[in-house]
Image 1 (cartoon, helix red, strand yellow):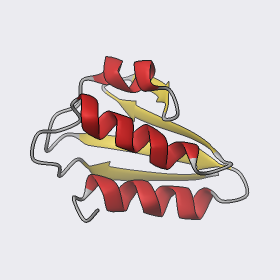
Image 2 (cartoon, helix red, strand yellow; image 1 turned 180 degrees about the horizontal axis):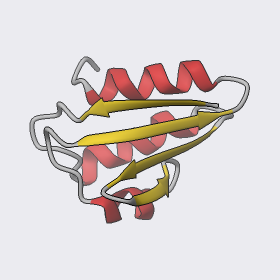
Image 3 (cartoon, rainbow, N blue to C red; image 1 turned 180 degrees about the vertical axis):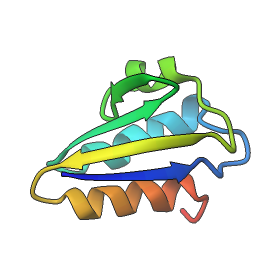
Image 4 (cartoon, helix red, strand yellow; image 1 turned 135 degrees about the vertical axis):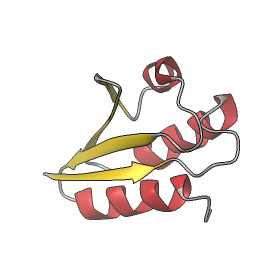
Length: 85
């Protein structure tokens, strides 16, 4: 299991469209992936769960991945949240 803290660097934070993209990215991986913010932990593959977090640009989150491709999962989510994709 890997855990990494990261900052949301998307201009408008995680609104509906970026959440949908993040869920698609997470769903490409076999690992279970959770995102935790402000004491709330949700499955990164759940669009409703992710929307419930209401994350804004500049907020810190913890991403946890557990499985065969956990490292790739963390890296792809970090790349997306940094605005590189």
